[in-house]
Length: 204
Image (tube, rainbow, N blue to C red; front, side):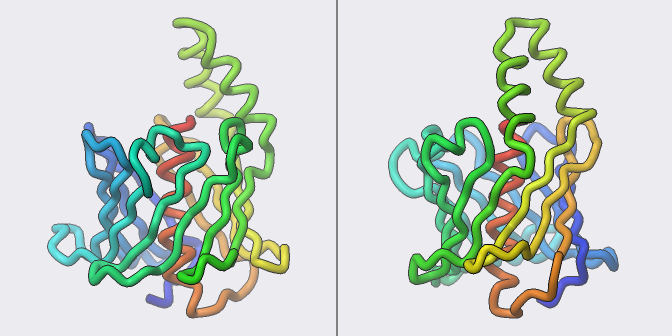
């Protein structure tokens, strides 16, 4: 894979959830499509624009796991069924701010992901709770206030940072590498951060 950072994640204008991941050189890294009308979150990852070559599949474990997002575990697998790892939401803390563990194939914690400014998510949630007017204000808030998320390794050292870029409908994210990563972590980190932006874009 060996992508050149920063990575760019762009959502398409579409009725369905689709995104592209490219590296700093413009090389296509992945095309992602989320399955619609599913109780459980199901995501497919492809290597090509035409979506002919599927490389990975991601799925929330358990009945209604996608609906109960604050406790969901999303398994990350290659298309042959072998396990890459999982993104595990960290309980009720995930209700007001991003708080996840990125697990390896043996369920070991490889990385943690945290919202750098959790108070912003809490404020936006309160604004959005106001009928009608709150929705409009929340959209403006979402445009002008752009959160960042820090990915730390098992030793607590920051390794990557995810930035939401200013755009309508939260369409653009970038991933910055804070220090050289391990080649064996590339696959896990890429899939985990795809799941992160899918979940956090839905949050607003």
